[in-house]
Length: 41
Image (cartoon, rainbow, N blue to C red; front, side, top):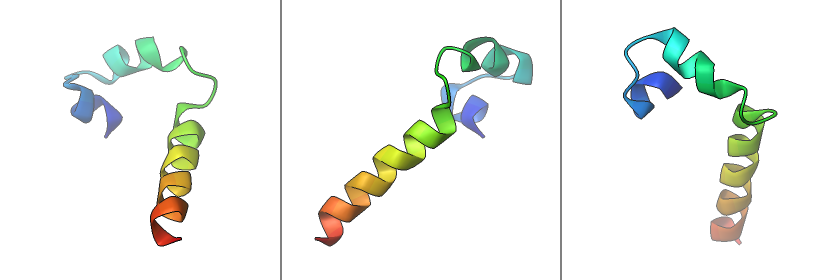
């Protein structure tokens, strides 16, 4: 899914860059959760 959003055709391309963040999925989830909490009040 992430690869498609980034325009990657191959899983290997996404995997090449995935190591750049320690836990990109957790980081993204935390940012989204914080934003939802702000909006919800």
